[in-house]
Amino acid sequence: MELSGTDPKHLQNVFGEFDRYAKMIEAHFRVSLVLRNDQVRIEGSPEDAERAGRVIRELLILSERGSMIEEQKVVYTMELADINSKDSLIDLDGDVICHTVQGKPLKPKTAGQKQYTDAIRDKMIVFGIGPAGTGKTYLAMAMAITAFKNEEVSRIILTRPAIEAGEKLGFLPGDLQSKVDPYLRPLYDALYQIMGAETFQKNMEKGLIEVAPLAYMRGRTLDNAYIILDEAQNTTPAQMKMFLTRIGFGSKVVITGDKTQKDLAPGTQSGLDVAERVLSKLPEIGFIYLTSRDVVRHPLVQKIVKAYEEYDTKGRSHPERKIVGKIRKKDRTGRA
Image (cartoon, rainbow, N blue to C red; front, side, top):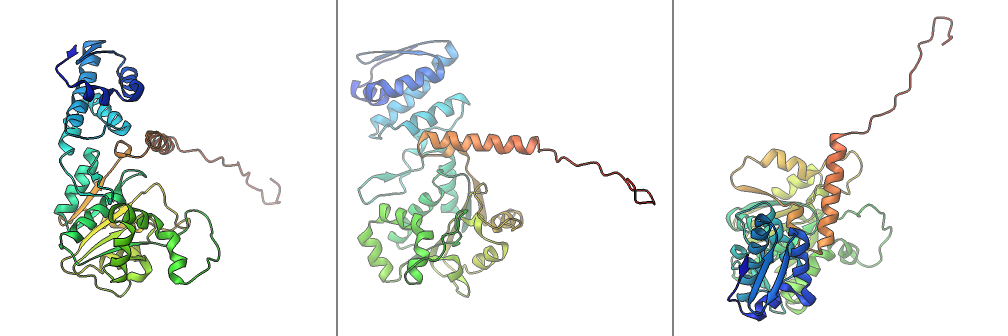
């Protein structure tokens, strides 16, 4: 199989520095790639060569459109080719949500992320459920900032339950805001990257952007706001109900959570699990489930998530048997 007539600079972009991406494609599909001028020769079984050719063609189109070819894009395109999916990175490339303060365009990077952002546009309330690294919070933040800049909402409210991640931090110095800031740091990080620290500070001083722990939401009615509840798996059912009943007119809500990373006390039911059972049939509310395929951090993170998913699945399929000691009945004399 041969691919020809392509600008050599785009072929070099797709092949990567020191042919790094080409070697990944060769190893994944068990093919051999030979690049000569503007031609690529793919040697291997017809099926493998066809899949490898699909990956290279899609990456070439992305490169020609000005997109940076990254390892995540190569890995995801290969996964789509493996399952012969109709989804394509080409379809996602035109959906620019916004730009970071450095001018970098923010786009959905997987079909799952595209489904997530489309649901946020269409529904009043959206639950984004999935493992770490799938962009749940970051994409919700980008959508919120875009709506704020377009004056679709008058303010942004970001909240999450203030629960330690499996460890006790003890006494924290400073005023109340200083005490809760460590729990809200991931939200600040996303705001700084997308909006810029200076713009964020100005809007926060005006009260147009609010970052607060979930407990601050009680007793309020939130009209004309973009509200994001992060780490929803750490809410109790009462907290989740309290939060959902704060929503007013003209508001949009995104709730994100990872069911595999709960920090609640043992035996405590998660508000996210209860909300899923109670609200899943309401047409105004969307539930989007992201998977390890939607992880957009370092490829090793995707492998870690997959490994834990397989471990959890195996544990459910083959639960450990409890060893129950035999207890001999005592006779009337008290002897065993």
